[in-house]
Image (cartoon, rainbow, N blue to C red; front, top):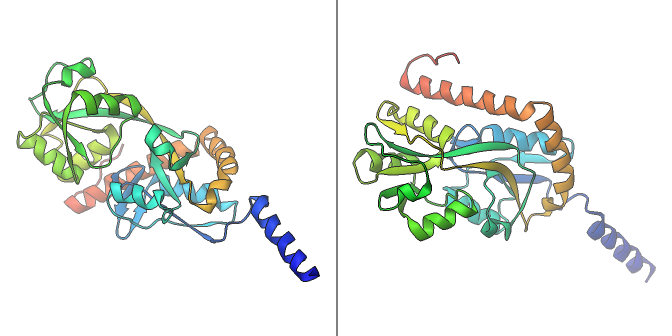
Length: 265
């Protein structure tokens, strides 16, 4: 009986202490086409987001792995079901809040409409998109308010990849392509079409990047410590430096694939 009571007491301490999860390795993943925050390289997701997460968990003695987990829809599903512990960068929506605990925001991200060069149209408000053919990628969200407007008012098809959406644009199968500005510009450069596309004159919206921890992950209990460290890294400029670092790294990788030196910025 005494041994049984000791076992129960130890188990209760583990349950209520909120300390070490059963797993020693955290699995983080993200969108495979959202440089400089995150992108697929080999069998991993790399970028400012993955490195930021590693820094946040370093002092907690947690090893972070960032495997490529599939397209964006699959990544979100894997996290919802607890096979991925967290997503290194995502926007906030009410639907996602059912499955994720969100960190504090760590960066802003303007969302824009890309159009084929010379095929722009007057744009000052969302209503100006009504009646035109739009495209974006599967699983992407652009904030609760615009998502609702898109679903109710716009005609937008979903593509599996950014390349496919840009292809629709250039072939005249879409009038505009909604995507994050920086990531879209990087992908256009990668495809060699920067001289074939342009932006509408005004942003669609500006969203925030968050880290989303699956509610099924044992690491969700670390959110208070993560937010404290995250605020520190934002205030001391580390987050901005990471974004700049990986933006430069992605540009260099594009230039290398094209066989030309990267331009200094």
